[in-house]
Amino acid sequence: MQRVIFDSSFLMAVAEDPTTWFEDIVEKVGRFEPALPVCVRAELERFASSDGKRSRTARVALTLASRFSPIPCGRAPVDDEIASAAMSNGAFVATTDAALTRTLLAMKVRVVCLSRGRVALR
Image (cartoon, rainbow, N blue to C red; front, side, top):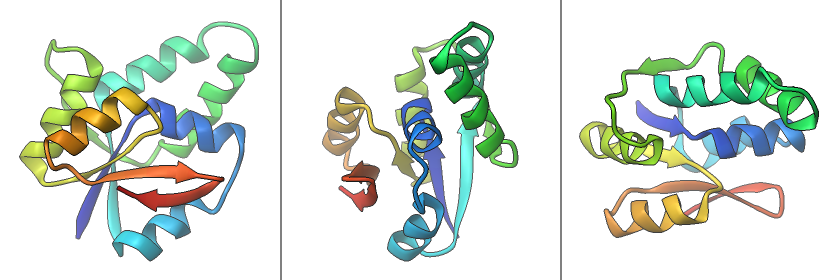
């Protein structure tokens, strides 16, 4: 089964504008194991602890990811941890972050992104 590692940007995007993202990923990738690096969860928890719309969106994103498999993180920046985990696990990465997408594509990591509210693979 393919593993898909989620970035906070993707989870917050689908939390803010709900889509059929899960079903779309299954359609594109097949059955998959959703995974969330511990450092991404911590990032979402930081966002959720404040006030305002971003906080509410982060709380919804945390709920969406509540059953995702955790992936340990080291001390590197979050994007580096995601890229490292994807390389070592042969995983896809779900993100809407353009800089992270460029990095991952240069590393030959498949990227799950959103295009007009639908899931696309790069």
